[in-house]
Image (cartoon, rainbow, N blue to C red; front, top):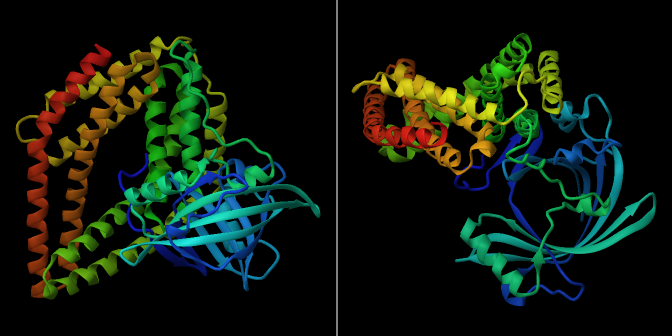
Length: 496
């Protein structure tokens, strides 16, 4: 579920918070390891003292979340790190107060459940680092950390590790730096954050995938747990609202949970399933408007750069208008995430992921039957698509493609490689139809843009943008038949 490529690391500010997407690679090093002098420009050595906070049962830590009070030189700040796909988002509040600030605790409502975090351990880090540049441009900081862990006034552990933190580095540049430090003697890291090492906690690992011949309940439990973890992991970032990807990933988790429950309807109690699906539908709608605005804002911001200078101003004004609507949508999202209804839904999802009330099924053969049923519905929709399908028909095919894909993912371990090939092709079709639907929505917003402004220039710009959207959809329509043909072929191989 990680995006295909990384945009530049963005910074954002909200309610006194600063936020940055953190991308880093860690290595273990021997006691005699030294940073290669040719790697970059040395920075002065620094002492960083961080006190980590969590519940006594490590709820934040196990969720991949870090809360710490950090003292570096004269700066004192509270920092919160939360998952963002395969990266992490670091949120900071400059504050000398000894208790976690409410602005950060508000983001952790779901994980703290009204409990107050307490100090666990203090890490004293002596950091030596260099700045790596390419064409005079700083792209990464490579740091050698000597860590002393102190708990209850006693030193409990000392260790060293190396960290490459991206500043503006691309994937290839990070790989080049990683090769250099490996040649200097650095070794692969076990993935544990410093806090895990200090507390001797094992590296966080996803639940083991069930064997192909495991009981159906094991497959369903594993799938539900996976998506529930993804949903809750992106809850804090969605509350903050500075990274659109957090909300997107949370909404993806909701869609996948809905599809899994829908695929598993024959083996789950009807009333239980419908009730949970209804609540997930409610949450998806709450997130949907904000997500649609995120997509359109990103699209129109990109379009601004493609326009001639005189045409940019009216479109920039429209983007500002969309951003104001997005701010309002964020308030609606927060109301939903702070509601008792949402907290109850998450509790029910966690229970379902732990012990789903499966009935009338004990073998993975049922998974195959469920996936086959969803594929048949998709095949029927594709065969009735016609030579010139309208937007509604294509949207319906997109939905059925999603459902067939998610059902196939549930049955993957009982169907093997043919199912994997079907899933891969379904993702391609889903992405294309998603781009088509985004184009339809974009045209709706363009017409809104035209209606919001009475200027001739705005009407001219709107006309150009609408024409681009129609050309875009025509290109997508042209590519679709061959992709659908391959999708049906893959589906027959997997399910027939």
